[in-house]
Image (cartoon, rainbow, N blue to C red; front, side, top):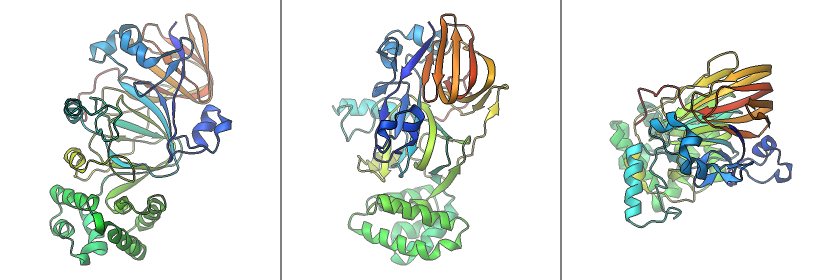
Length: 406
């Protein structure tokens, strides 16, 4: 047997949607309860379970890796499934955060183990030794903050809003925009203490007055007020003047390399990432914030993510390219048609987003309806896909990328 249905865990966070994931997976009884993420993969925190075997995908890929991952995946150095697929749906802003690069993750994991910090301790930064590059594919209109704006943009907004307050880090950056001076501003805001409420009040008052001075001013004001509604006392309210505001329409994607500060603001999407749960947070969260570690790992140079459009592989499948070796995400569209899916001695996950798809292998047919997912093992020849539907397809690149994020 080479096709296995998956039961996938739900993460119920307060910022989640109260209907999107429920409607996708057909759980009408839970409409109104915030479903934030659907995890499809083999992460130890929350692994998918193979329905027919009643075993976790994490356990199987860990202890029987040759069968479940294949020799090709193993030869690339992976002894566990290297990618994690998620469906995310938010109605409120997520924490402003970064993901570490591979060296930082490895060193941090060893360091915190040596200090005796439990893996599930709330003040732990590194819960595994892996980096977490990720790609986000919009399934609805999707809004995010991603990467620092160009220095001159940031300086212009800071001058209008904060210059007369005589804040040394702000003045230094306005007169000499640089990565080191931007880092100083960031540390100042995050460490504001008793000055924080004054900064927030000043920002909200002045951004309302001057938002028309910039073509994106109305959006900066809109998201500043939206963030303030959810986090009225959080310094992250000022973030829209620091970071790029990105809107994706369904079918568009962005790639986030390690070190890029970002926050998802609203919308539903499919995320694929290296199989890690490492997150360093800095604002819009009640969770642990380690300013020193975050500012050490974060990039303080301008970064505007390019919108990724799909590249058609054939009449059925279109791929979203990312400069990583751990994952490849594509979309499969079937219209009462047949598609011989190349397996290429690699593990695959299919997640049906719409309609229905039948997967035929030597042992029979496995049907996937909307919201259902399956794991395809490497030890088979091409699988035949039939039906009328749309599916996410997660696997590894056929050829290792010559450039990576680390």
